Image: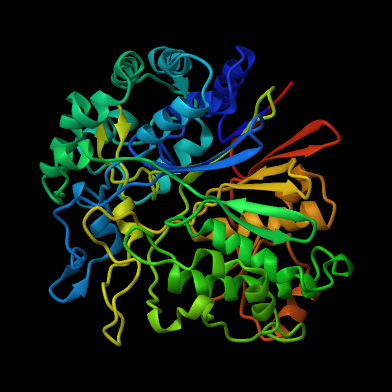
Length: 533
């Protein structure tokens, strides 16, 4: 089964599975297609985190393909005239582009976990780029609504007509440049991307951007390496919930949120009730307080990963939750880290993509991939968009007390991420659930809520995905209109919560494994699909 954000990508993944390919093979084929048909969200000019479960070894691997900062930056990179730059001013152009990591990550994962020849994985995307695909309603809508998309000639010429308006729904969009790029990578591997003609084009686009040039060099690209890291796993009732390690904050924060919730009588609290929503909100805010204080690139900052999800620590954190009223949340002290606390927010906007795949061998992939904000830096190079992931760093390097912010920008550093590819295992070690979502920092709550509703409340996975979203990431409670009735919302407010009703555009894609069957769910808030056999 393959569940991705677009039917074309799901079909490409299914083609690889039908040929006997592994889940990793299918994920690579899907990513290459997503970069064409869902270019606003992810692509080869961005980065990703992948969990890959090897059934023959009964072992989970975590691949880090997060972008890195150019070596020429310093910690005041986002400061102008003593003040942090405006977000969109920093985003658009070469200034925000991090060294893309997804292709090195996919090549590493394929070398370790792939079965099919590398070049075969490119064929669906190449054919689709040459033949063209119909612009979907979602892509058209985002071209209309996202601010300042058509600000550079290449992106304007590709997505917009001569009248300056976005190409209409149903327009067949061809991308011969992307096809040529993929053909080169299929034949020669990723070397041209990091050291050859593609690398040269990326650096030229970044450094020669007329209004907002960046500092990336050929050496930055050539020296990029994907990482294999230890997954982060936390106990949750009779399950083990595993996610990506730092610089993703997903593994620790999803694990901490659920790890606190297990100390409450969840079975008696109904979905849609103020009681269950309150517990979820309080656990989320405590988990986010720790995330904001301690999560960053572990190659630059010591991250107390194990302590943040340890059973004793989360039991103590859970005692801070009053079941009857809202409480202020602040970071805890995992492993004596309070003296090193370095809290700061960083912008994270909700344009990302998630896919979940299980192959015939029992292997699984849960992968979240992104170019950050919609259409990234707005730089289109060789048929693909470049990311703006540098804006996931804190724009300020120090707090008011002059202590260094953990997630400040530094040369070669990877920005903190909320991408939360997740796998849940039964106590016997068998795979139970693969799940994740786009959505910026809200990803964490989307993922945790889906796990809670499916595993504890017994909702079928598709139903759990479609249930109303709830987020609490540090400043207010957001609920979708269908998440709570007016009566229950009033009860939640009476507990002391500031509640806002709004649509929350998740893109949760999951596969549940139950009784030797696969049950897929694709979030109807977007245009994803599940394909299985």
